[in-house]
Each structure stands twice: as structure tokens, then as C-alpha cells.
Image 1 (cartoon, rainbow, N blue to C red):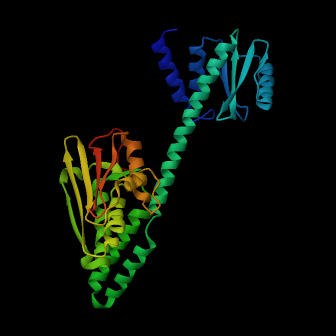
Image 2: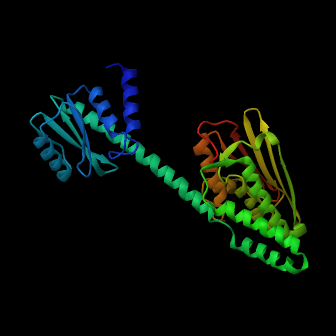
Image 3: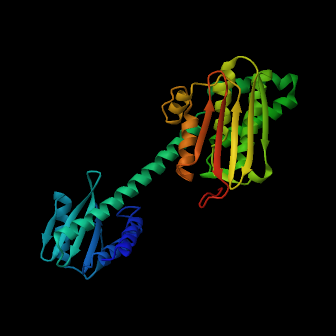
Length: 338
């Protein structure tokens, strides 16, 4: 059996089983397994007993009895020229592999192991996707009640004295909450993230007054670059909530975006209270206990989408402010705004 074709076949089988034994690729996986192990017939069954068969038809009566026996006993079984092996994924029965023909037990076990590894990989990737979506939902729900209360209080105070200003801020508040809470696709554009940043900063300037100075500069060539949804605006929130507000005196937040070769580089910098670099590492690792869910969430999602060499770079020292840098490829296959 040639090594490279065998590996390629095993990879295709694993891909076909990504959605499990009840998925749309299970028939192709059964065909691939039968050819790979050169057996006359082979079947894959899920826990319902539904069998997908490839190759020479087996004795339906024997196959059904053997399948029922293995599903109930969770142990290997054999009848005539049939052998069946239970498929345990993470110590739980997931289905059964049935092979027809004169096949050695070692080859049958190898086939079962291949299927089990493919099913484990599919479950892990599905779990990772579910975790990422859960984190994003948590990030959407992380709007500070304190900020919302202060913003609405400021708007209410301006309704009579400056109704035009109150109207503008109410529109900013609507834009901010709509972007943060509404259902979005997985990706958006840099321009949309900066629009959300503008709305948030307008509200925070109204709340903090002269305590907050802001500088936003973004190069036009990066505005159309797709990025994961909600990766920039949380960094600005973090800079104000954990950098400027605790300082008690005027502070500056700078947000810059520009192209550097094949990358888009965006920085969020504040001259607030800063933090110990080791504490910043703990926060990025998800061990922060100060409400900085956003940083760890953004860093993890960036690395998931673009790979381990991307993610957040945090530069900080006590009483020296914090600078967070986001670097993403300008072009990434599969990253497209919804």
C-alpha cells in the first residue's frame, strides 16, 4: 500500500466524517474505507442502527442481527464472513463498523481506529466552533450597565437645554447598541468596526466630558478589509474602562489603522493607568478577573481565524498607559463580510 495515496485517502475519509455517522458524507466515507482496506463490503451505522453500506451486499439477516448485538453489548461481534466493531468516541458509543469478507482482525481494528479518530476530530472542531460562538454572544452581552446608565442620563439632561445634541447622541446610542447586540455574520469590514467605535466614543465623550480626549485616524485603503465581527470596538471600550476612567484626570485614547505590506495594522493606545505586563499576560490567557473578557476573547478569535502568528500584542506598564496592536492579513481565504 503506497504511503502517499493511503494518507490522502485517509484524509478524505476523515473529511467525509466531519459531520458524524449521520452526516451527508458518510456514504462517501464508507466507499473510501472499503477501497482503502480492499474488502468486498463495508458498512457504517449510527446509534439508530441506520446502516450505510458500500460494496457487495451482505446477508441482510445476519448483518441486522450482528449490528443489533454490537449496539447493545458495545463489544466486537462476528457472524459468518462478517465482523463488526463498536466505535467509541471519547468513551461513548457512537456507532458500528461492519466489514464483510475474509479480513484480519488487525486490519478491521485499524479501520475502526481511523473512523474513531475522524469522528473525534469532527466533534472537537464542532465544540471549538460552539465555544467561539458562545464567547461572541458573551461579548455582545458585555455592555456595561454603568455606561448605559450614564449615557442615557447625559442624553436626558440635554433634552431641554440642547435638544439637537440630545438627538445626535440618541442616534449614536441606537447605532452602538444595534451593532453590539444585533445578530451579525461572522465577519464584517474595518469600516463597520470604526463606525461602531465612533458611536461609542461620541457617547463616552458626552459622559466624561473634558476627561476624555480622542484621536482616530484610519487609512482609506484598509476600510474595506474584512475582519471578524467585534474585534476592534471592545479594545476601545477596554482602553476607556480600564485605562482612562480609573485615572481620575484627563486622558487620551488614540485609534490608528493603516496598511503595512500585506497586513492591516490597527492600534488602540491610551495614556491611562496601565498595568503590570504579567497581569496583561494573564488577561490574554483568560485568567483576568477584572471584567476584561474582551481582550482574551478577541485574541482567541483572531488566532483561530488567522493562525497562531496573529492575535493581540499588548504593551503596557504601570502608570504608563497601554497599547494594543491588531495585525491581520489584508487578504485571507474564507474571510468575507456577511
